[in-house]
Amino acid sequence: MDRFSAAQLQHYTSTRLSGDSANKVLSKQDFENAWTEITAWDGYLATPLVDLGALAGQIGISNVIYKHEGPRFGLGSFKALGAAYAALRVLQREVSRRIGQSTSLTSIRNGEHAEICSQITLVSATDGNHGRSLAWGCQRFGVPCRIYIHAEVSEGRAQAMRDLGAKVIRIEGDYDASVALARDEAEQNGWFVVSDTSWPGYSEPPRDVMAGYGVMTREICEALDQAPTHIFLQGGVGGLAASVAAGLRQYWQNEAPRVVIVEPDLAACLFESAQAGTATTVAIAEETIMAGLSCGEPSQMAWEILEQEASDFVTIPDSIVAPTVRLLAHPQGDDPVVEAGESAVAGLAALIAARQSPELSDALGLNAQSRVLLIGSEGVTDPDIFAQIMAETDDT
Image (cartoon, rainbow, N blue to C red):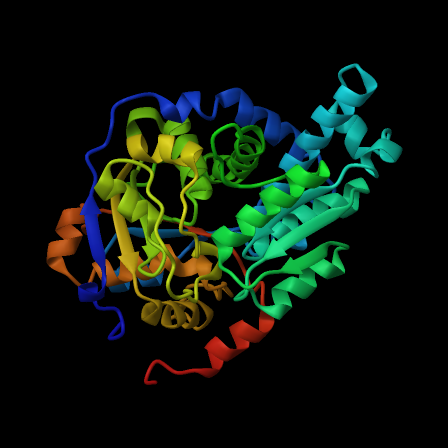
């Protein structure tokens, strides 16, 4: 644990706003609709909920519960639940408009409107996993797909999307620039954006994306016999964190866990938003190793939930990410082996580092009775990067 210094972390305790965004932005019916559809897909299985008991004992808390999303639909991440479902909903709305009557998700999924779907192009920007899910969904539904990636997205992740039939367009700028280009070209060409981030006038696909993520949260809740005391959630644009926070609030009500948002210090738009008291965009000067979290502009819709549900915001340095990946892959005691991607371990890295400091532990309400839930958002989505991390040592 020598590499995990709490001095490297920034922490901000938020003054949470009152309100009911956890039920209004994402309704119980939104989550229910997504659950009904996604659990009917071929290959659906609940992903593992791993008890890291030895690690919990080592850092002095009661439980560390890790939801491992690596096996999700063979795509390697929780994103499989979001973009593919949102794509289906976009197709449902557009096909219904074109034929002049309502059609069902099942009819789209079963290919009853294949000719119309083949004329609808879906596009998105991605750091990797969201685009892979969209490409997978488009391949299944027979829909053209264009994915915009920024300069630092690995070639392995780009090729995974090409292998699923997507046209991949790489730009020179960062993630936020790829989002802007996807929006502009979609508008010029009559294509449809399937994004996990919202902006004024654009809310339905991001809501569907977050509703899809609710499948994961429901699996967790139904597997537990009591609520966790804390959940450490990765940041990014905020879609994952907001969806999980809303789902936990709806399920556990007043017993819902304390929500701690964790971001790279190189891309801390939610941390800055909490400090400013409003959704705030930050410039990304350097890319983080946590590729899926390299986002400078928060989702407005996600922020509506997080400003009410998140108690704490923490930033972490890249230096503690690779040691956390190795710790999961080479666990101590009888904890199971977990092969995780760089973005998956942000919450665990922050938790371990926080437990090195009595002051930060106290500020976060962490103690020997704490039961902490973590979302292991991706498995090994780029084997080359994972191999490089595993070849390093904690002495370097």
